[in-house]
Length: 296
Image (cartoon, rainbow, N blue to C red; front, side):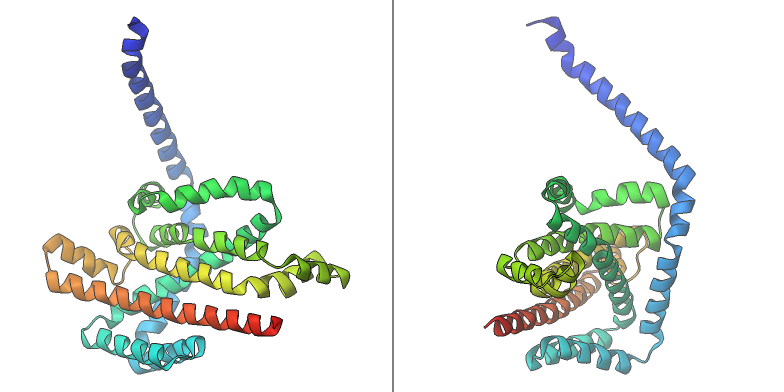
C-alpha cells in the first residue's frame, strides 16, 4: 500500500481539526463584534414577550381561562374539545402550574407569530420560483433533521444565555413546516381558478391575496399546527438556556430526580399541545369544508 494512502487519514484529521479551530475562532470574533448589536435588534421583541407574559400572569386566572376556552370554541366549534380544554386548564391550575403554563403559552404564541411572519413570505416566494424552492428545500431538510440541542451551540456562543437566544432558537426550529406547507398550499391551487383570475385581469398581488392564499388556507393551517407542535417540543430544550416556563421544572426534575414534578409538568406540556393541536386542526377542517362547499 502506498505510504501517502497510509498517512492520508492522519493528514486529513489534522487538517480538519485546524479548519475547525479556525472557524471557531472566527465565529468567536464575530460574536464579540456583533453580539451586542444583534441582541439590541431583538430587544423590542423581548419587550413584547415580557409585556404579553405579564398580561397572562397578572390577569385573574378565571379571565384567562374564559378567554382561552372562548378561543378554542370559536376555532373548533366542538363541545368535546372545548370542555376538554377547560378541564385541562383547571387541572393545571389545581396542581400549581398556572404561572409556568402562562409563561410557556406566551413564548409559544410569540414564537409562532414570528415564525408565521417570517416563514409565510419565504413559502410564497418559493411557490413562485422553482429555483428558489430547489435552493431552500435542502436547507429546510437540514433544519428539520438536525438534533435540537445542536441549535443551541451557535446561538449561545453569539448571544449567551437568556430569553432572546431562547426565542431565536425556538423560532428557527419551528419555522420549516410553515414554509413548506405555504409553498405546497399555493402550488396546489387549481390552475383553472388561476386562469379564471387571469381572464378577469387580476394582478399578481390580487391573485395571491384573493385567490391563492384563501384557497391554500387549510394547508397553511396545517403548517401553523406543526409549527406550534415543534415550538412546544423545543420548550424543554430551550429551558437549558434560560427560557422560563414548564420546561424549567422538567429540567429540574431530570437533574434532581423529582419524578412527580417531572411527570406533572410534562403532562401540562402535553395538555397545552393537545389544546393547540385539536383547536387548530378543527379550524383547518372547518376551512376545508367551507372551501369544498363554496366550490360545490
